[in-house]
Length: 245
Image (cartoon, rainbow, N blue to C red; front, side):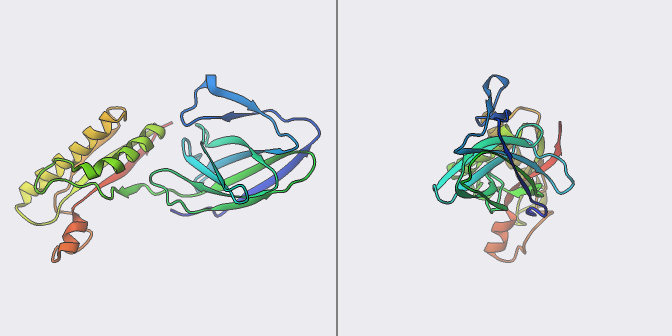
């Protein structure tokens, strides 16, 4: 994931409260939107998140870590890649994209000084997210498409990500090593991809958004001459196909 190449932070002081709109929960609805205004103790931070080509990044989970208060604020961007939040003055903050699929690295730091007056802060962030992910620790019974229980934790996080980023359509790709017959491996990879899709649908992902596809042993990422290499080749991937409005 490329981090921000352009971070713009501007501060504005006002003599009267500025009214904005903030989304206050993980899946906001119009009824839950409330007006925010800065106070002498709290600054109004407005964040705009886009990719490197200035396309908004909607429904991303953003975490803001306060160094002195040792507290984390987490909120989702809206459909336009924006959100607003009130933050205490007199602290240093770092910003990161949070949730499944994010690296968790900080890509912006800023300070809100403890000064008198009403403060509006505008932060513009750019980053380039990954569009393919290997689903680590998604495991199956040997030679079968039955998911092992150890797979459920990561798949539950993937489901939360897909439910939140509801405009994404994706392919679930199954891969095997080269042990056994080609045709059997092809069928096994297809069945495993379908098993993952079925699980994600059961966890609330809207049907029709995911395409299961098996590649058998045709796309190795390591050699098949060692147990370690074959383990890497037996994998499940999520590939983002499109992001709709």
